[in-house]
Amino acid sequence: MLLENRVPGNVKAELESKGHKITMHNGFSDAFGGGQAVMRDYAAGVNYGASDPRKDGAAIPELTIKNWAQ
Image 1 (cartoon, one colour):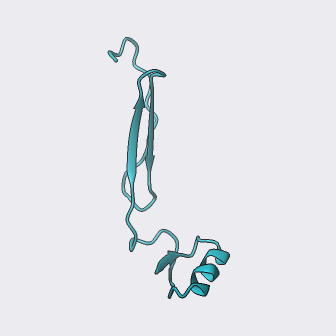
Image 2 (tube, one colour; image 1 turned 45 degrees about the horizontal axis):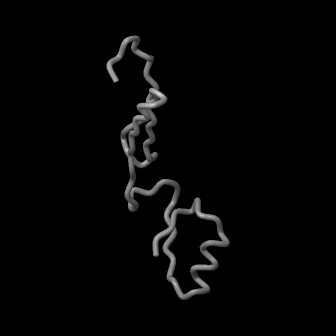
Image 3 (tube, one colour; image 1 turned 180 degrees about the vertical axis):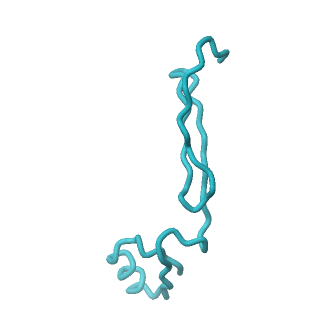
């Protein structure tokens, strides 16, 4: 099992006690996948976004556009 070193030590110990062989990776390793997501709340008129640090994207706020068709 692969784990990043950001996982608390007790999690590693518990997994090892159950027989898992653990390989540790530093920081945000590219050995793991990543995710990006965008959501629009039409009722509130708000956009939400997030990007995993492993990806090259970013969630950047934008100014409100008046009279924007919803």
